[in-house]
Length: 378
Ligand code: HEM
Ligand SMILES: Nc1nc2c(c(=O)[nH]1)N[C@H]1C(S)=C(S)[C@@H](COP(=O)(O)O)O[C@H]1N2
Ligand SMILES: [Mo]
Image (cartoon, rainbow, N blue to C red; front, side, top):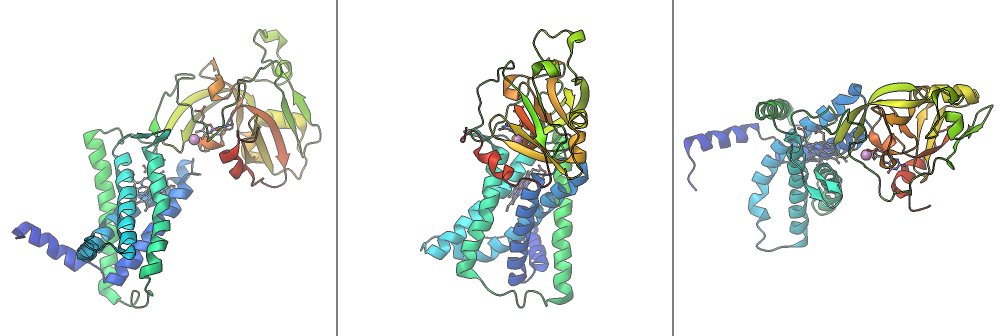
């Protein structure tokens, strides 16, 4: 193949920029660790103060583009599957998984969509993303070499690293600018990467339930809200105590006011968000009524399905057990009769169909399992 002058200039620039092979290999592993670390951690970031996690993820992704270009250029001749050994198979699988994670991430950033059964593009991205380190470990079993020699490369290598990081940050900026210019569906993503759906339109926003959570609609006349754990005065509240009966007139309202309001964004890790006016029972008022003891540090909210999540007491006080969204009674799919509204938390923590509020001393770690298996147990 004959190269034009322009192509030759690019190859020359790449040659100059390319750190030594071992440095590239170890930087690749480190970049993947950063991507998977920030990717997983980003799933619990709901407050703008954590926006840096997403920025680091995006810059690292562009660093991966540069490093993969070096790497694939170097090994391209060896990757040709003329003789497909097991070692080579794993190498090719690794290249495909990493390119798949990169491709789906960038496609998402530019506003792409796909449906794979119940999964959207971001779920496909996360799955490929967590597969990368698994395949990488497999690859390293065959091709591991020690990092010795990768570190003592001196000034030139340091400059090459700086160039890789600098280029990545520039590419990331450029990608945002291109997004805005082309006005793609990815241009008005929230800092979490999520896209807007149905804000301010009452119950008309997406429904997201985990694996098997699909209870039969709650009959309010039988429904009770139990409030117990580390509290001096446990309570069991019914519709009448909360003034929630269908025909309850204003002057028959229960003891606990259910007209507290919060404006808050529900932001699901599957990639959509929705901004609403929520109304209901302030958890602070509820806690005042049951008097938590001095030992109480956490408040757990439990669903009729066993799904549950905890918030630190101070944060729980700011949360709401919502009965209404934008003035409409919350529908069954969205958690009727009451769902947790936890401002600044990701959607999976906003427990639906709440039946229990419990003050505890320690966080209950079984809840991180329960969100995957609830609905199977009951
Ligand atoms: C080798 C692994 C990975 C690569 C190459 C990768 C690459 C990318 C890229 C290119 C983007 C778009 C960034 C942008 O906004 O410009 C992205 C976004 C995202 N990734 Fe990854 N990623 C990886 C692993 C993961 C993992 C393991 C998770 C979580 C389990 C994850 C979660 C996310 C999320 C939530 C976004 C959306 C944030 C946004 O749009 O800015 N990623 N990723
Ligand atoms: N009981 C219960 N609560 C739940 C869920 C669930 O599956 N079961 N899904 C969570 C997830 S992942 C999100 S994003 C929000 C979605 O709320 P919505 O279905 O009202 O949109 O509810 C959360 N609360
Ligand atoms: Mo979610």
